[in-house]
Image (cartoon, rainbow, N blue to C red):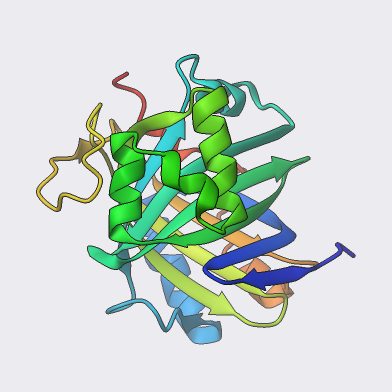
Length: 238
């Protein structure tokens, strides 16, 4: 069984569980069928409005596109940084670092104010070392010494379901859009365009075990686990 430790600090959540993850590209017909099965056995995320929410993320990368290349090349141990908010609500903004290790994933998160998020976008970084949040300080160091910079906005719609045994989370992600080269993250009028022929994405995440009832509900005959990345998809234009 995977080890688990959760450490909360003021304004910072370190979620250091390594979780299993499946991703499948599915059709609209698959979505309708799986959604119906999930409604019978799982619950909708209580934070979702009308069963879904809109996600806007700003991803970071360096001049050599390190995060993008590591994802495309399937590097075993990799990480990426992003800033994210939901449903256009910039009163709650999260800085996140996602790490992958041998196919397992974990996420570290810290809260940002709107002004702090805008300062990061603008390259005003000096305050970050005195922020009192380890993840903010880590991003500062990597922006200063590894050249991480805001790269592109990723917008999409998510439908989330929860099954508490096994701490399972199942999501449908679709209408994936990109801002091209714009990083005007906090501007609701920032124009985004469809990210090419982006698929509907089914994601299943769990801790130590995946209950059979969920395994059966998300079955997609003839489809295999994919290594799809919304960030990589949104970089198709540069």
